[in-house]
Image (cartoon, rainbow, N blue to C red):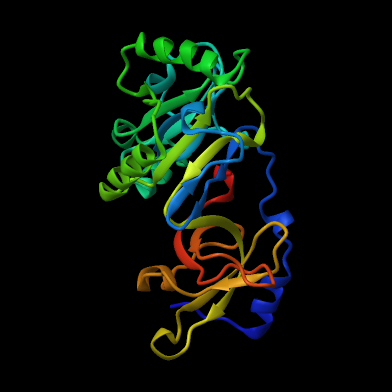
Length: 290
């Protein structure tokens, strides 16, 4: 059972998220694709054939330096020696993944400082880019796919990339992926050079908007949630503090995400005060996975 005092809540809310979880992002990150009247709207001047499309994998982003697995912010991932022993001696970017709807298993396995041999057998490093290779994504893809395929290893695979001929085909595939429990799709512009940070040439496509925020405090529950967490207070870059009070199981209310951890939430646009509308908790993860 969670217990709080007003003073404790005020102290937690006063904590700066900059001191709780400030990391340097070293990988390329995606922008969300807009929807209009339930139809996908690509950035101005682009068409669907400009992009390679793949399923968005719900795992832990990882970077292989050529000798070590790391999170996208540079924290070491303690994989078993056998897992990376035959990886190429060059930089690779991908997702550590255990399959659809297995995010918590992946996170538990990947972030453990002492690798669990049995659980790591369920993990694959799904590679989608080779950051140190020169040239545009078309050229990097032509390099990395045969490289990974030639290894014939179960624990490392190249993400399957497809070219589509229409927005209707894209939306049909999105429906198919979501109907089987997938997160969505990724679109990677073929002529995009590798850029650390957010890039216009890397897009994510989902039916619902979601975002991440840092947990900075709690609000105690009332009524049937008396003695549990009623809501968590969170902070996003360039947005005011706001709280998320729905989407939690009773177990999550009894043991809420830790201060400084990262939560993913779903929402429907923003208010005039730049606060997400109808924010609903989806999941949490430690700041080290940023």
